[in-house]
Image (tube, rainbow, N blue to C red; front, side):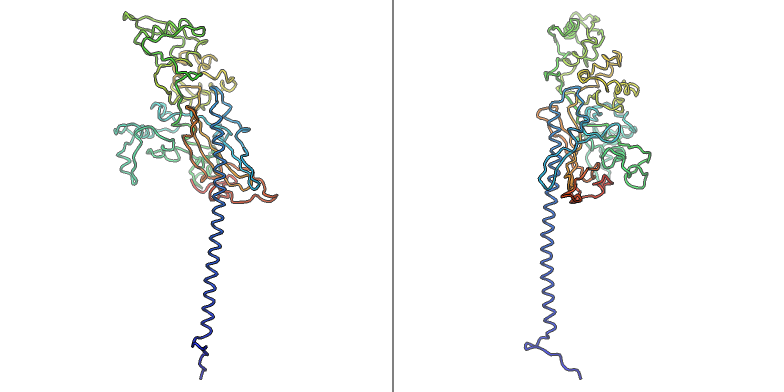
Length: 483
């Protein structure tokens, strides 16, 4: 017969008491550990947030330096396009623990990146370009051209291969179309047919470099043709920001040639024949759309008696630059979408009516060794005998030598921890003070190129290299985790 279990004075079994004590101790331990973990997590989160903000501040320092620079760029000057001594690995602050730096860069039309700005005037402005210019963009099929024009026009009548609001209303997730100017180039992705492959091409991480995953066919995202060349899509060729004031180089409003009764005071720098022509034009009903029309021209003007007479303009090579600078054929305060002949790549120059591939390449070749003072006026195309007067009159109304809006990327980073932020910005110097008109955080796409990290305290570089949550692959310029 088994003896009965021993009980204490209260009738409880001692083993049960011990188990209860252990359970209580375990619960208390778990609570303490949870509190310690939470405190450590909060400390880590605070540190991460702090370094991320410092990386942001470093990148914004690069943005402010660019804004300061463009406030004083004269026409014809292109030193801002590639200036590594000014834009690469600039030290912002060293607090003893971390050294914060920034690097500003842009896409190089010849491949890779350069340490400088990209002017928006070197691109085609989608909000002012003609249908023929838009249709000449690379890989621009009729269906894309029509869809884009329907997206921005004010009517609801679809073009033959276009799409108006009715199409977008029938989508699984309907949305309103612009029916007006595009606010950003990225809005192209809302237009029917404008897929990421059309807009950004193979450059999924926007670093202007052919990464391994962008040259492997269908093995990894994004899809590519594995031809060893980076197809960058439409993004490097188009803009919505280019504009310039209709003023001369001193900032004074230009003289409006088509103002009734307009006369010009004869001065030593203006040809007498041109002064006489302006007086005859002011007394007539004729219109000059652009002063480039006056080069080596004789125009039929009606006099006060209603009789038409051929009047020479008096504008030749010697006075062309002066006339283009001081005079205008419109009363608009701004000229929108003119393409900078000094900076546009051949692919954009070819979009101008009258410029074919051969002429575009000739322009690129001629401008390389042209002094900055000669590049201040579009007149150099004719003065340097690159084009005859007739061709100049055809192409000059689409061209400029001014660049007042600039797009670029900035990496702000810690040279010891490797933490970083990547920003894309557009600044506008058409008005004063210079304005920041576009800012986007691209950190999630990864580091665009490797950065040289300095060992902390003589050891390995410390810290998580990500700008927000870190990406070891991105630190070495590897494949980013997201599109």
